[in-house]
Image 1 (cartoon, rainbow, N blue to C red):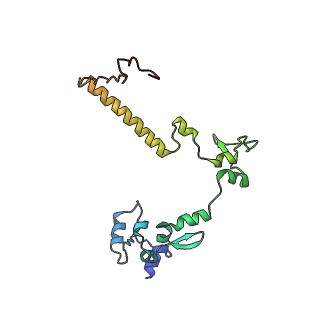
Image 2: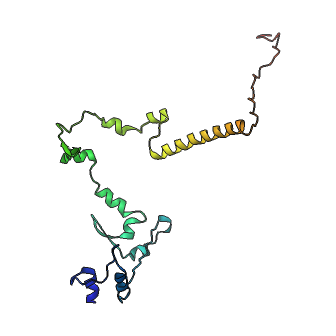
Length: 200
């Protein structure tokens, strides 16, 4: 048992076989002869709301340190999510708020400190405009606002481009005839109604 603790903490300085990338064949053989050498595998059950099991969460043996104390890993990272609750409770400040309270860090360029006369900016953000409604000007211009919208926008563009290339391929390479445009004519009657008037 003392040997086992010595391997963990290296109290005596005795070599039990190197396990790093510099190990030799002798290190490998020494580790293989060790009666106490074992591999520990612990399974984790990552649960979602559809298969959440409270009994399994109670049996979790992995302690997790949070700002609220020790919580089991399974309870912290699964289900409804203690993680969200704890992180919201102890949310850190925004970057601008941090700069306001603690000042900015030094800025370096070319290995030299760049002194700033002032860290204040002239940008005026009116809170009532920022928080009153969702931004619609980008939608009107057709500009994506986030990565998902940009991905969908690029997919639509590539789909239209692929359809155009396929049409050109059929026309120029396969020599398929181009479908003629269908002319839609007015639905007006060719012969005017004569003699029909108001009061007749």
